Length: 219
Image 1 (tube, rainbow, N blue to C red):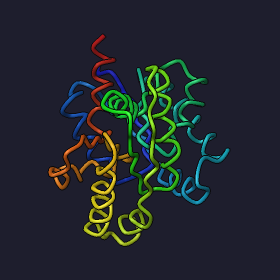
Image 2: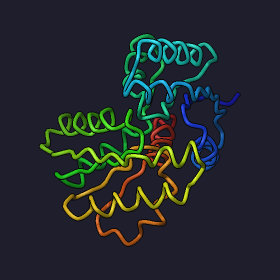
Image 3: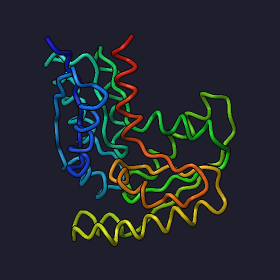
Image 4: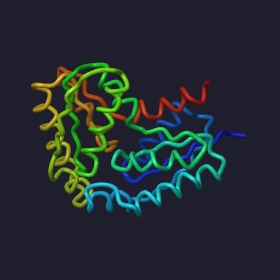
């Protein structure tokens, strides 16, 4: 019988990308998906978590445990801190998709730019990098780089080209005076080929986020 791994998604655009990475790194695993895009909309509207978001997230992870999952993946940076609350209520581990990225960023430099298009992601992603630095005993400076308007172009108008133009411009600007750039959201995964000319490391979360599950299951 295949092992089951649960994934909680708040953003429809990244679902197929994560499925493809599961096929690549976890071909013998059954992926159980819970998709609730209202979580991200509520986080955006409130510029962060609400009690209702936390309650739903706790229910989802509890449901995934009841379904026999051996571990879970939290797909969305905006609600990562709600996953921390849920972890206290269940026995199976919840992995954050952006944790390996944040850990690697800390290992690569002291001046780190966190680029985000969702206002609800800016602070949680930046705090995650700062927490990883504290755990590693390193001093870093984390710049919050919010690309205002880019999310609306992608989600509300479907204008991927404009979204990509705005984000890549922000990355190139940040690259001038930082050691590493973190692309805080999974929706930016496909921008890497457009940033091949950037001379400093530009990190995304999806691939390393799924790889950590493979490492866990291999133990």
